[in-house]
Length: 215
Image 1 (cartoon, rainbow, N blue to C red):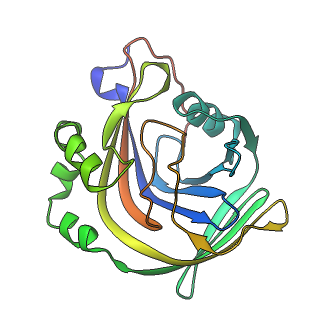
Image 2: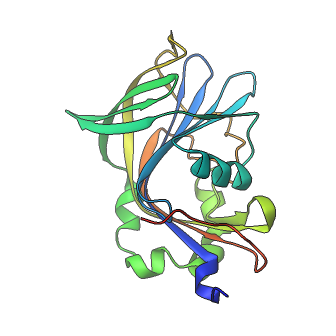
Image 3: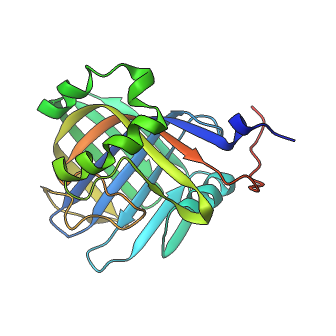
């Protein structure tokens, strides 16, 4: 029987969010440490509200789709790499090159908070109302799918200054705010295009039977 600690799953890495002139908004997960190993994923909401997940494996797709809400789930290779001035992401039909800037004022402030506190569910629950006031559409704690509880511990925030992206071979246009907020879960990414260093903690209900691959 797994102990209580095994019911909290930690995903550490980066999340990038941006809007485009086409109305399509994109949230990229670039995960370095998770129960599934390192992986990347893409969540896309078109201007008409259609929500798509692109994940690199059936296991990852199943877990993410059972935590968030999508109209379409695709399994396809997802990769990313650092390039001069930013990063490049390939996720099935999505290709994006992001030009990154420096820390935001809030990003500099967040660096003051010790990591162990910044990622702790109790702290994230306490500050969630304030986070929603500071950044519209953003919460640090909330309910996820299938009785799960989710916590976002952001440690730094950097600006996204530009993007060159296409979906199914069609250019998405120039960088825009991530607005209206995306509707994958209880919280959106910030409206101002940004990439954050984050640890996401997902608390599973006691009767959860989620299994993970061995590494």
